[in-house]
Length: 116
Image (cartoon, rainbow, N blue to C red; front, side, top):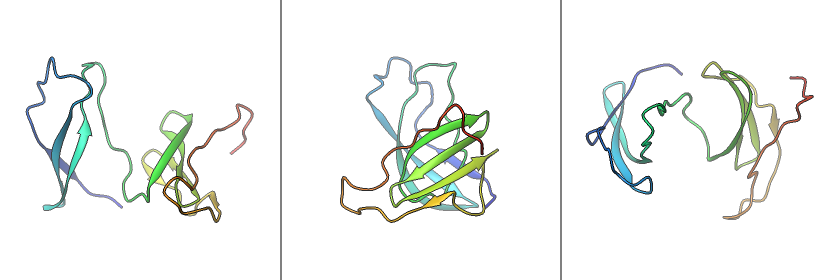
């Protein structure tokens, strides 16, 4: 999936705003407003929040393999690999898991000796 996503919202000069406060933004994809989202504020000017992937199904955890390369687990039991913002064609893992509110695939870890 490719496209341009425009995010608009409150003035980004939010110095002094407590980190616990969230702000609501409007997300527009290819000219159509899709939803309003609430995101946390980053007060450190050396950090920037940049979305790198979309259309996920309840992501829970990521594990970095390298720069612009990570594994992402989704609560429903799927693990995908994202490289340079592109989701792998096929999931690396797709297993049945419990579906209750506190059940599912809730974490991921990799070994330093992993060979992917």
